Length: 171
Image (cartoon, rainbow, N blue to C red):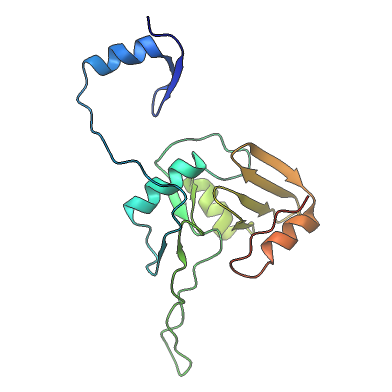
C-alpha cells in the first residue's frame, strides 16, 4: 500500500493513499518545473503571474511576522517601496528600472499590506524568501523559511539600511 503524508495546496496534510484516491478521479494539469533560483527583474510596477507563482513557492505564504496564511489570495508587496519617479515639473525623472522581481517581492494579506504601507512598519527582502521587519515601536523580526525570529533592532537597522543589492546575514 501507499504510506506516508503529503501536503496538498488548499487541502493541507493528507495520507498518500487518500491523495491517490483523490487523483484517480481528477484531471491533472502538468506544469514545467520552475527554477526558483532564477533572479528575475521587471521594470513595471505590477507583478507578472509567473513572478507571483515564484514568490509564493519560495515564501510559502504571507511574510508578515508570525503570519500563518499559506493562501495565494494575497497582495504582492515591494518590501523596499517602489519608486514611481516624478513625471511632473522641471526635475521630472522616470522610475528606476528593475525594481520589481524576485529580489523585491513578498506576499502580504490585505490587512498586513495596509499596515505595512500606512502604519510605519519597515521591511526589506534580504535574500530569497528572507525578510527583515521593524515595527513603529522598535521591535525587529526576521522572517524566513524557518518562521519568525526576534532579532536585535541594531541588526535589523543594519539590514534595512544596507546599500541596494547587499544582503547582510548578521550572526
